[in-house]
Image 1 (cartoon, one colour):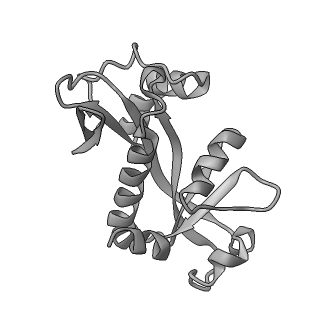
Image 2 (tube, rainbow, N blue to C red):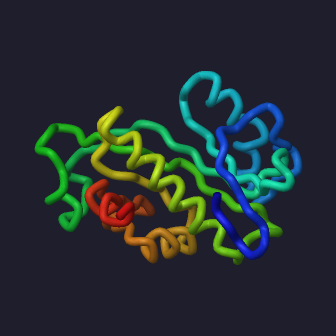
Length: 173
């Protein structure tokens, strides 16, 4: 489906045939999660873990992201995003808890491919589970810059960023 260079990639849910032990993105917490916790989270329905794999090597993990239901207080949402929210005591959202690209593949645009696929999945399911935005907690300033460059709005004094579903709908056209 997605393409980076000459290699074609497709998105799948994490399965037993995916080689997790060989994945390394350079961030220990993201590597450890995929290797030790991701399968358990899938079984417990705590997170959906999506894997980007090369079509010619379906067991190899090029990158991954996680999605789950989330809620936050409307008061924590930046003013620029509040106009797109329903007036409820809590705001339903989709949390993209993790996004990682293998170290050897970084710098080829796969992070943007993964983000686009994550936003498409979140948008596709927003009408089913009720979600007015995607929320991310950037792991560091470099990650926050990546999300801001893709339209996310950063909350004041936090590494949390949001992107309203209405904005995502405009990207899906």
